[in-house]
Length: 379
Ligand code: SF4
Image 1: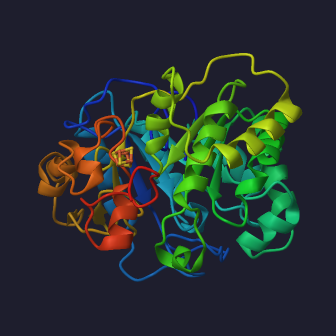
Image 2: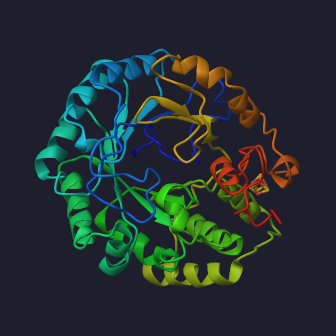
Image 3: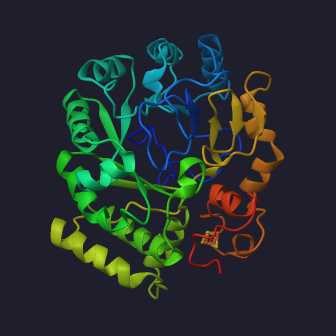
């Protein structure tokens, strides 16, 4: 995954104006589903060994060539998984992307494979950053979610090691019922570590995440208000599958905002204030952003093309289709870009800046064009 202005992973809150019809900002490649971890919320339901049909090295090169075919400035490739470090040809692929002048970032699992040596090799391959997952402010919470004792300590070590080697680090957090009240302390920890980008994923019930309790709309609203406040302390805060934070930001700028979820939010924001003091700057959460299929496209381990990693609606396959054509012309993606949604998301005045999570609408209703049930404006 990514950091910095050029390597944005989630819903953008800055950057170029809306309008991703010609090319995505990010191409996610699930380079493998193999992973040494067994996290409770894993989208990919990753397993220890690679699945049959994984893209070969040559097919990976072709994927990179297809990204180049979008034209300059090239979309950024996110090498994700599973754990990309489980691919024996990972560095060959990274070096090829670098030789084609495509920006990329890597999203490794925190396991024994993530060593000072592999971090050094990732940096030397030309990656601007890695993303590291942190799902709790303390070891008990994080290790329970990751189902691996000692992972919290190793995660803190990996963040320090990467930063010490001069590699950008983005911290990713999946927010769910069991950890959302720790967000102020998580933010404090990553800020103390010197991390500059924090990306908060709002749980979508796919893969192993179907068994995890997600937040109520009011709690989602509270977290958005908290994140809006947290973004005032010099750390870029972004969300994934919570585009309604852009609606919240607009409401916060409104002289008479409607603040659903304000009670929980004020507890979290009070804790933030107690930990960090008065915020030194304005919020960086703005009205611009991506959605699955609108600025983002996802290629699965076997080449299947999806609008996003949490939206398993098949658009084509890299083994026979051109990524550029699929991204520009898939009817579903055109509908997402034109906000042709059903229900509240279709009539909402915030639809163009928000649009709701297409992944969550699909997970709940089987229709990627229905409304996002996590939003406080959706009955
Ligand atoms: S109703 Fe839909 S488009 Fe409107 S703010 Fe909520 S999620 Fe966004």
